[in-house]
Length: 368
Image 1 (cartoon, rainbow, N blue to C red):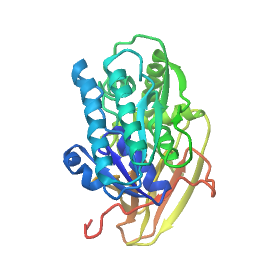
Image 2: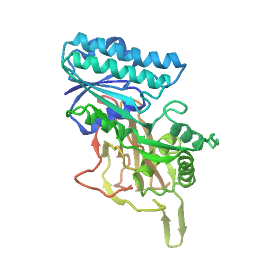
Image 3: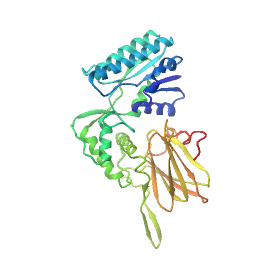
Image 4: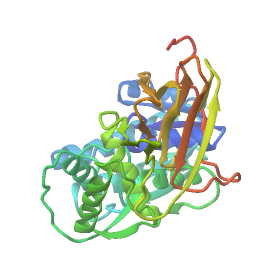
């Protein structure tokens, strides 16, 4: 299936592209803001479109008219294509709540539904609650992103405590992708009900642990999602994590991973000189690399970007690098001796669901 994704450069758009690449064989056509004028051409032979592009913040009139205008443009592109197209709309639970944003989303839903029906295609309305996740923009995408950056920077945020429904961006992306198939016309993903103050308390707990290199309690899926969100905001400045050697006449002891609750899984590998391991990314896994002996280069690249970040590491100066979700990574033996590396993940390896998706850190032709 050829799938156009509007708003592909935004927060939810990036997560949706990431999940499409990891879990499907669809041909994905990303449409960012600077490509909007080319939408009719990009949509001309598409089988489906996931419409994420929207206006979240601004003056009331700009927010409402912005969302309606984007839907009107997409409807015109659908009409010009002449193809029966599946339209999946990243709507909001605020649709119809009386706000300018809710009105804009509701009107966009009506516009797109009629446009899809007119082409002989189909329409799916995906009502998303408050979203959070890696690489969210503070004071824009959600209060969670605002809290993450405030806690990271040691700034106390203002809190108006209430219960909210939160959904991680990868789970939102899963709902959008699921909507590409089937007969359903509306999807309401289930959120996690949590207090605003509770979110802040958890982030402060994570900071207290992770500032020392310790992994916090990750015993619930929500804790994992929130911790992944927090630690993504620290990368790459927080890396590598220094590990403290304890030396006496018997030798040296280094604690590589300390977890407050739970354990996960540890493994180690040997790598001969010049060889690279890894070349993959994850959607949920908390993973740590630590070199025990030898010298290496650990390299990472955020998916759909070109910049590669390198860390030169050695067993002589113990440290660890934690891999952010959605960043493809590898490790290369840069020395003349066998490299020994320990790997740790917060969850046990499951062959039927390894959460490992292969991709090269360095695009073809880019040297180290």
